[in-house]
Image 1 (spheres, protein in one colour):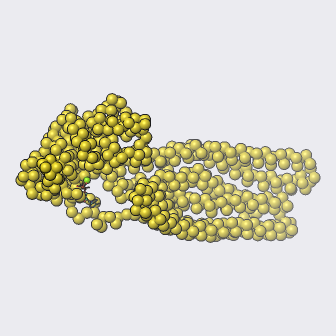
Image 2 (cartoon, rainbow, N blue to C red):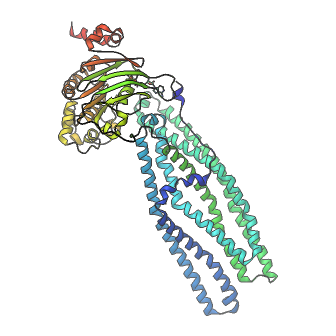
Image 3 (spheres, protein in one colour):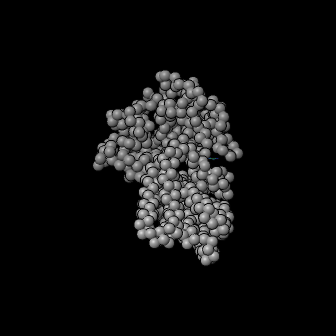
Length: 599
Ligand SMILES: Nc1ncnc2c1ncn2[C@@H]1O[C@H](COP(=O)(O)OP(=O)(O)OP(=O)(O)O)[C@@H](O)[C@H]1O
Ligand SMILES: [Mg+2]
């Protein structure tokens, strides 16, 4: 069972942050003008902040030195005005950026959801649902946070640093040079940091996905865990996964700590050095008091952009890791797609199905599960499919609606290869009843209708009647509008199965594919559903996967699947007589039934 060891797949590793983040461009491009306006407002706010030290220089060297009170009042008014303007631009930036970044997030979330819907069941078998969930929530949050705050601040900081350094160099090339040399290691450190941090971020986000899977599975399987008294062990396993995440987070915090220490320490050290050297320049008379105060003010102004860059780079790395995880999912190829030039379904649909040399092999498997199936379900007939457990009956049934594509051969619906039909049209014609009846939280009516809004209430009721579910539904407190609870667990197994059956027969489909549809019913209910189903099957073509003779009795003919091939087709009685393999599968029941009916 090599194939069972395939997951989880974790492809963490070094990748270029900017190139990774660039993949967000198609989503952000539509919002380029509001984001641009927000950036402009942010840059304007910073520019106001940078001009203030220059005005202060004029105040000290002008009105303060000359004792001109009128001029002093005017200049101070300008400083206050600039501060107020800075606040206004800051507010504008905040307002402008929120709406577009929220829209980008929504668009990305929708794209992810739509893609998850298009991916085949085989893909979903290989991906733990917690990983999907964490990508749709935690990772998208990290991306959104980056677009909303970090991106803008990174641009603003870059502008502040370049503009601030420019002014410093212009005022005093010596001070500019000293300051630049001292803060240079911050940049180098940031580059080293980037490589490590992104890797840790990715591992942490992956482990968060594992944690989500753990919570999800233990909540869904809460009955099993309780019944077997395994709650303590489940908690211990959870703690282990949480511990792994904690360790990764500690490593991440350590890497961040090293960066922050340099990012906070060096600019402050630079401030001290500028003060000492600037002071000596003033003492020697090569610099005015005002220039020194302005230089100090600029260096002080640069503290925050330099310091915050540490956190912003961390956020950018986190967003890059999230982007990588998001696109790993979005890049997963949708293998079951509409044909390039679809052919319309021939009208009226009669529902005849023909398997021609159908092969199916799971990816990576050594052998074909279906090894050349030739089988015809004639229009209007009900064919039962019988075979040992694990022989591929469900796979064969699912291939009719292209839940998975054959790896060889073809399936014809009314003479047309199903791969040439539009997927939606094919799936609209074929109604399926699955082995395990899956219900969604919501009302009974919603579960039968499944968003097919054209179905009338009368049709829903008729379907419930066929599935022998009307009586129990009417006895529920709110009838059709009763909520079935998470995954329908408020209902019994047999009730869920009958709702799933109603969902398939509603609107009288022409082709029904039913995978063991009566398995969860008691003998009495089974007989009633069987009788009602007979009426539906009279006007439809159907393939019924059957484990028990009672289900086989619904069919006109029976096909036996064995070792990947259809080894016998015929009436139930005939196969019992002529096919030992069939007898071996069905006879124990036969004896039982006979025993009961013939005292
Ligand atoms: N990725 C895989 N690689 C190889 N074999 C796989 C893979 N996934 C599933 N299988 C096998 O394929 C078979 C699937 O068969 P299927 O579910 O159609 O059986 P079935 O006839 O419906 O059985 P049952 O009567 O128990 O419902 C199983 O034997 C299963 O172990
Ligand atoms: Mg099955």
